[in-house]
Image (cartoon, rainbow, N blue to C red; front, side, top):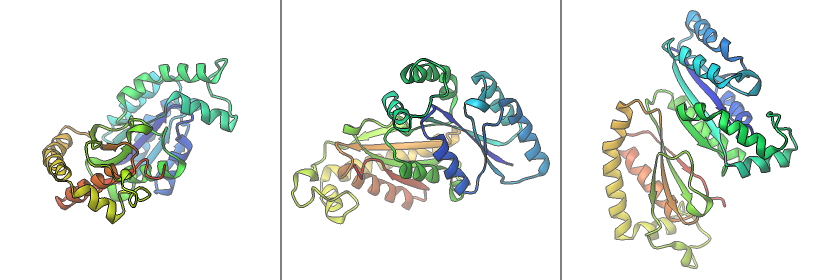
Length: 284
């Protein structure tokens, strides 16, 4: 049985970086394959008997064609008993505008301006976004962070996991991540930012971790979230959830959310669960 990932989404949201990252992970990457050929590719892979073959299809503006065609092709590929995931890359409009202005590339849409082209593309891709297995917000990610996220989700060591679970720390002042399934707000905990000797450290540092976890409220919070997730994660897996991202947010994403995410992930791993960690705003 082969595993396919269809990479699609907004132009400028990181398809090229994602393709390179998947190739580095050992995926066979095909860029801009016309949609009608996608089901035929699945048949060829099945005929070749390529067990555990991992194929990434980058659906860009030249190959995707009409969105309806691509959705039909994905459905036909799934009918071939392959594992098929759709990864939709997204970013806020203002980020996409800055990226195009910074590179001076033309947007693939033919509208009069970049903003109009982005709006047109977003509208046309609504069906793909709605049906995607995972929507990844790249607006707050640099290239290295995006590579790390792709590695967490699609590395070979994760291939056998029925559901890939990530605990993500973030700062609310930098915006709520679009790709989280559930969010926990830890801004009720004492803030190390107001302790002079801790301000320049982060939640990965022992003094900050000890400060955050010394709060009785923090321990009760982690106990309760851990207990809830022990019940919820198997239920999500039974329902066929492919990817689950748990967001833990504080004000800036440096101290409390990082320490709590680390502790939560440590406990869940001790329970035998495969958990990835990602600290979105720790370097801001």
